[in-house]
Image (cartoon, rainbow, N blue to C red):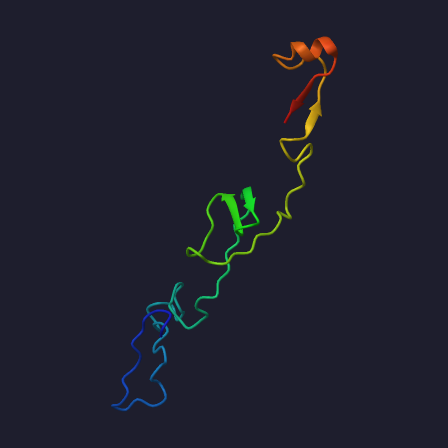
Amino acid sequence: MKRHGFSGQPASHGQSLMHRGMGSAGGSQGSGSRVLPGKRMAGNMGNESVTVKNLKVLQVDEKNGIVVVNGCVPGPKGQVIRVSDALGKKWPEGPMSVEQPVEVEAGVLEGASEGAETGNATATA
C-alpha cells in the first residue's frame, strides 16, 4: 500500500481479512489469463544501494574528512558513502604523483637544451 499509494479495501461492508489486500491481479479470458508485466504488487521498498564505477579521486583532505571526486555521487547531500578501489581495473604503470622525476633521453624534450648539453635531462610526469 505504501509502496504504490494504494488506498486499500473498505474497512466495513462485508470485507473479510482483505483490508490491505491488492484485490484483482489480472483479467481472465480477454487478457490471456495472465498477470500483465509491470503490475504493481507488494515487494521491497527502499534500502537500495547504488554503485558508481570508475570515478577519479582528485584530492583527499584527511584533516576535514573530504574526498574530492570527479563525477556524480548518488544520494542526498551530507550522506555517508563508501569509497573503495576499482577492482576491475589494473593499477596504472609509471609514477603515481607529479613530484617523482622520470628519466628521459637527452634532447627528447623541447626546451631541454640545457639538460642535453650536460646529459642530466629530467622531466616530471
